[in-house]
Length: 311
Image (cartoon, rainbow, N blue to C red; front, side, top):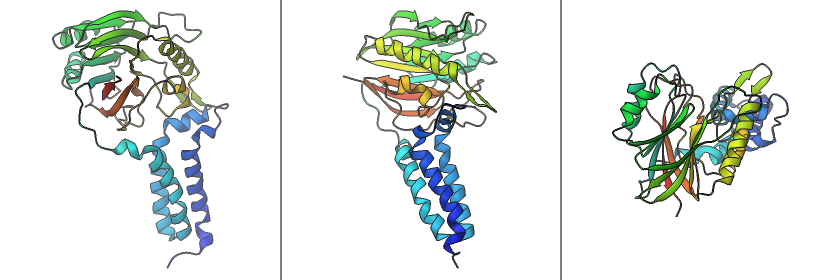
C-alpha cells in the first residue's frame, strides 16, 4: 500500500533541490567560501544522492517522491550520460596522450615511467618532477620518447620532434620562490604541428570556511591568457589543474578549449578517486575519450586520452 501523498513531500522537495543544483549549479554563488566551485567539483556525485532518495522513496512507498525523482534523473542524464558512451574507433590522425602527476614522493619513478609507456602514447605530460627523480624518467623514457622538454617541475615527452620550448609563467601574485609549473612546446607530428601546454595549477583545500581556491583560479586565468595568445591553430593542454571541468574556476580554460566527450576518468585521490582533476583539453581538436590507467606510486591516477587535431 502506497503512503499518503503528504508523507513524500520532504523527499520530493529534496529531489527538486537536487535537480535544481544539478541543472543550475552556476547560479549557486561563489562569493562566500566558493560554495559554487565546491559543488561543481563533486557535481557527478549528485547521482548518488538520487540513488539514496530513490531507496528512501521505496521504503516510504511514496509515489510523489518517485515522480519528483524524475527531475534530478533527467538533469543528471542531460549533463553526464554522454560520458558513459563507449570509446569510438580510433582515427588515422588521432594522438594518444597521457597526463600524470607523478608525485614528488613517488618511490618508484622507473616503474611509473614504464607503466605510462605501456599505454603506447604519443605524448606524456608529467608534473611534480623533482631533481632526484628526473634523471630516472629521462633514462627510462628515452628509447620510446626521444624528445622531451622540462621546465621547473613539469615536463613533456614526445615521440615526435619538439621545438619552441619555453616556460609559461602562471605564478599567482605573492609567490616569490622558484615556482615554475608551466611549459609550452611545439610538437611536429606527421599530420601537422601543434602547440602542447603542460601545467600544474596550485592546490585547493577544503576548509571549514569553504573551498580555498583563489590561487588556483588566478593561475588558471594566467594560463587561459597564454593559450588565448597562442598563435598555433591546434593547442593541447595537459595538466594537473586541481579542478574539474565543471568547476567555474577553470572557465578561463574550458571556455576556450574542448574537454573530453566521453569517460569520467576520476583520478584523485588514487586510493578512492572522487574527482578528475587531471585534464586533457584541446583547441581546434576533439578529446574523444579519456580513461584512467592503473595506479602508480603517485597519489594521482594517470589518465590517457585520444585527441583528434583539427584540420
